[in-house]
Image (cartoon, rainbow, N blue to C red; front, side):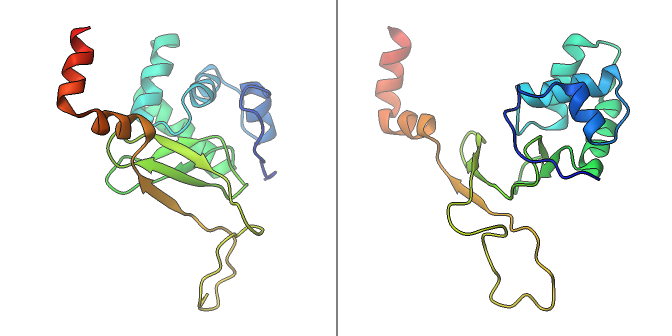
Length: 161
């Protein structure tokens, strides 16, 4: 298995990504990769909606199968924010983290800012050889903050204009 580093999502086409991961190139898999490029941090259901618009015969199960193959091959990563369905992304093997809005669920990538991977070291590793540290920052995104700051009166005023 070849490690996949973060590259511009649009710089490498789906077939090249699949081959590099040792996976057979199929229309369904290509469509799922393209959907992940279009919608990073998407759930399987969200990806299915995108894929079904271009490949109507595709099933939700085939999207789940492709995603499982992608994760197993190191092409994609599954993140599991508390209280949300699993989300998938193509950015792998760089030990980045995520910022998640606790109101709308928006997800942003956050690079490690200090040190080398893993960028966090446990106080006691209990004999484990730590390879990755997963950190999720929870907060309120700028759009939700602006919505709250505007208040109900300002939202009603904006809707009327």
